[in-house]
Length: 588
Image (cartoon, rainbow, N blue to C red; front, top):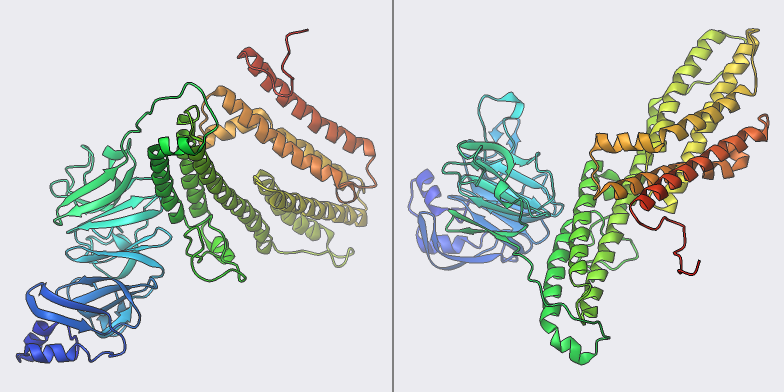
């Protein structure tokens, strides 16, 4: 009894003795009288607890407790998961393995399950445990024979096995906001309202489509297809056998007003129902937004500790954004963009309704909050791409010419090899899309540094040629830089950007929007070259005639004019007013 406290029958079988209820009740307090966790009574698996008994084992408050046959898994308010008891079959303790003794199948006292941080929920199936973290990741451990862990076959194993420590479910494409378990089947709800399912599919428990319903096991997560046209708000499990997915119903169209008047207090009361619906929707969207961790305000040292007024937990830092995978940041940006689109659709729906200023104000506040977070994520992505490109210089060996009288051919080969790598890095930096002034200046500065480095290498090559008595020209390095900028301008033509959109499968509402996007993207890239040209003390060379730089600048300006001309012709063809041309007043 001193080993487990809460599992008297198991200990009775091992020790061969009968423990009285009074002895069990007395020993419930042995672990720590100063930390009271929970009272427990009633039926627990095959045991009966006749009266409430206080359990005092874990330091700190508990948020949730799962009971196995002879073990306990508990979630603390601080996001840690602890386990204790005996579980010799499946590995549900999640305490991992020892090199000598093998899997940990018993623990006298609560132990923190390793590699689990910021956990918000835990669920238990028949023989496995699932955990959800605050950043939308799902971890599973325990019996995996029915695919309920969602990790597939590890190391090309012939059969699905158990996991004695938490394993991250790798194939979830989005951040998860809710987990649910039915026996040996696992479900996860994403921020976009998509439901993923894996594990035991006998009787199509997972709710898969006709092509997959016949499979008995799904080893990895699969999207449930029937809800593609609906956004699921939450999952509910009834009697450990029935799954209910609550979806958002169709929008109810109200009656449109004939005219818009400034609302007074009496109009607010007339439309209180619409206001309540808008608040409910916005609160629901806001809860989804808070689940997208990246994009939240940073927890700066001078800020007050704890959650802020918006409901953020305050645990996001600059280091988190610098260490996270870029793909995860891009997924977060897409999630926020979908929320903006949803709120914009609602705003358009009530745009012409009478006396809806308050509703529009709430929606506009939410949209602005989403866009600010989206811009923050996009700035982080842009900065990370530039930083990653700059880090690649560490992989390039730095060569310096020490003695021009040494083996000149070998020195030239070294410089050319490094120049090739630097040129590739410059091409990568040029494709990065800055989203604010800071990232734009960082991009331009990095491009200038790389161009100066390339020009320095070319100058060294010319010097080595001079040492060998071969023809050389000190103006060639600067001319090569101008030629490189000229060729780069061609890469950002409308046709090249159109091909990039086709390869990346970027969709637009119509051809007009597509062309407008291409023109803006092309002009933005051209503006970067024009901005470099303004930094003449860095980007210009005194050996090159000023006319060469003038021709390059005029080429860039002509390309921008050509782009705008093509866009205006298309708008005129469609009966629209071209950009930059004032509307006629009818007198001319």
